Structures are given as C-alpha cells and as structure tokens.
Amino acid sequence: MLDRVPDTQTVVEGGYLEIHIRATYPPDSNSIILDTNPWLPNFWGLRNALFVDSTGGHGCCFIHPDYFEAGAYGITFIAAVFNGTVWLVDSEHVTIIVWALGDANADGSANVGDVVYLINHIFKSGLPLKLVAAGDCNADCSLNIGDIIYLINYIFKGGPPLKVGCATAQRQAMSPPSKTNN
Ligand SMILES: [Ca+2]
Ligand SMILES: [Ca+2]
Image (cartoon, rainbow, N blue to C red; front, side):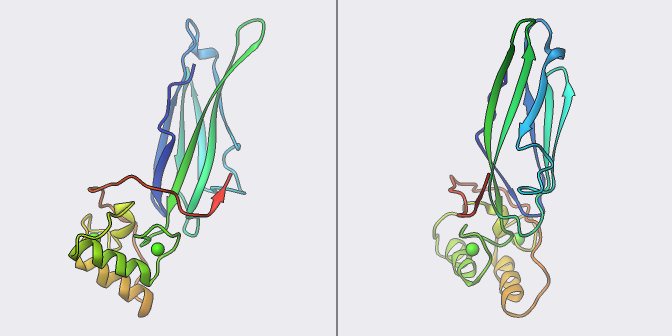
C-alpha cells in the first residue's frame, strides 16, 4: 500500500525537510487514511514537524527543526484502509537526523573539534564531511577558509550566530549523532 521511503533523511538545525508519502489501494485510494507515530506535532520530539494527509493516498511531513534539536528522531508513517471486512495497515519507518549548525565532525555540537576537522577537510584532504551543509557556517553555499574563520569567531570571539548552510556537494555516507529521541 505505502510506497517505500528512504529510511534515513537529514536536515540541519534551522533547515527544512519535506517527506512525501504516497499510498495506493486500487480501486479506491481515496479511502486511505494516513497518519504518523508519534502523532505530529509532537512536543516530546521534533516540535516543528507537521504531517498533512492530503487524501487520495498522498501525504507530506513538513519538518523545520529548531536550534538545539540536533539528534536522531524516528517517525513511522502509517496507511490504513477498511476493505469492508477488516482494516488493512501498512507502515514505513524513517529516521530523521538533525545536524547541529557547524557540527562538521558530527559529534552533536559545534566546538574546536569542528574547526580542526574543517581545516583538515579543506586543506589536508582529511576525512569527508558527513553533512556538508553543517560545515557551511557562513551559508555562502561553498566550503572554504571563510567557514573556518566564521566558526572560530563564533566559538572564541562571540561572533555572529552560525547560519543554515547550503553547501550540498561531497555528501557522504553518515552515522547519526549520539542523542536519540523516539
Ligand atoms: Ca562537532
Ligand atoms: Ca561557506
């Protein structure tokens, strides 16, 4: 009934993610009911997440993570339809990884370790960034020394807040930060 959905999706704090859901039940997809577990908005998990059932088997989850929400969050999408005798149910589980701004080394926060990680990545062909947008601290959509300076100013000199990055190239396989909320 439910189309498969990529089981891990990422978004940076302050960023925006949409997860589109589609379910079919011939001949009448209009009878499908879509929902999520936990129900959204969920004030014990991602606060700025909403799910809308647009009917006809179409739904969309809108996620706009707040700052300080870095971590991993599980959402199960559920489709249900009554076939005249019993309820048929299908589900898809998705883990949403929320990355902290400036968290280039993916340990859950921005600190001097990320400065070192960015220097190694940009100048010494060091380890790949797990989420490039998280290292794009000045949000000019590229990774370079400007991001290192911006991050140093933020951490050590009370500089302007980190911005929601937009660099997307070099995306690599990733593992989630340690904090887990389900
Ligand atoms: Ca970090
Ligand atoms: Ca940048």
